[in-house]
Length: 519
Image: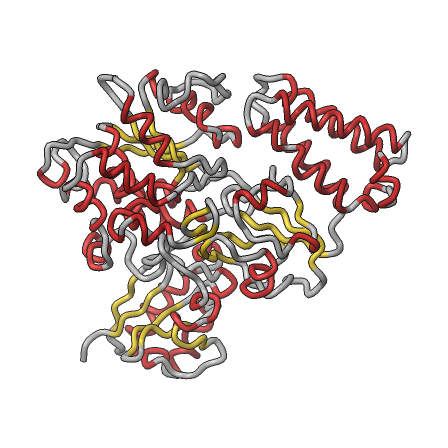
């Protein structure tokens, strides 16, 4: 009898709740019972409330069980786990779980399906198809595909990737670089980590295609030090891809050379900003550079450099493989393709949801998230990381689109969604935003370095009721100075959560709505 395939994730989220123990228990129990199994450590599907999610391959498809702990294994085997038998943890056919079935997984289509480090698995699921097409094209044609797809930077700035690449391609230099900023520091975000741990060759493929497009021969992946599993997986994936000829002096036998290395970050939120990251990569303190010159002209070591985040590069292989128009047809307005939204905070069903731009926050919160984990009403939702605005219920039906959110003073950022119920104190959350900025500021510019410190003090005076209306006016002036005068988004975006909390939840600051509107 052939061995039954059982899948247990090796993703950090699964490891944190005992995936290794579950895998060991399965191997031990099946050996004792004489059951023949093949245990595969896959990536996570992103259904974090069901981790550890164990899947069993059956004639009907992969059947899911979760959340599974080591002590559940014996009972699962008694219930016929290897045949997809019924059990209280039985979730049905994995692909039919509504949370997954309602998604549009383009970038994450392999996530949780394959062994992340298996080159054979990757190739069997359309891996390298984009690279093979790119090798048959001139650099200008690759650029044309990326431009036409409408792909914009998924790190937060949403700048058109094709324009950035075209600038690097047009620059004259003896050396060019491709750099991936994987310093994913936003609260409630994990799509970069999931990609590096669960589908690393997709990132490698995207960076090789970028190198072909602009004429770069060296690449770096800058990974935050808090991601040890991602660092280890990417280093192993790079070694295997190099040995197989996908990286090196002659990429797949062509005349194109591209080598890739991992660099572990020293630990600084501001290194999410591209120029601070470049300083860190060069071995210096991570502080923001003045622009111009743009990194596309003078970037790493003063050379033209393509800088994008993980999801931006990971989107590229699919664009080349399926065609720019296929990708462009997803989304709305100028927001093309999909975005991996990451549900976190006080939410019942936390996890990754890849959907085309245009769905609403309400659909995400209730259609996928299932409301709060506490069972209490949702009060506020921070969209776009710790520097993103708090979005009140009156705006939950606005389409998730870069321009629509910018029009209401908010950002989509990296797609992080952090949910708060009605016990949240918005004045304290606004104070935290200023305090976070004060701690994480690189200190180079005064509006960010001093403004955030003064911001904490002003919010404290407001909550204590000291000259409240005058202090609110002062806080708004301070926020305006930070927005207009800061050197980078660290200072210019810190006012987003502060002002949105002040505007939409004045009662938490001891203000009435009427008083707030007249200030």
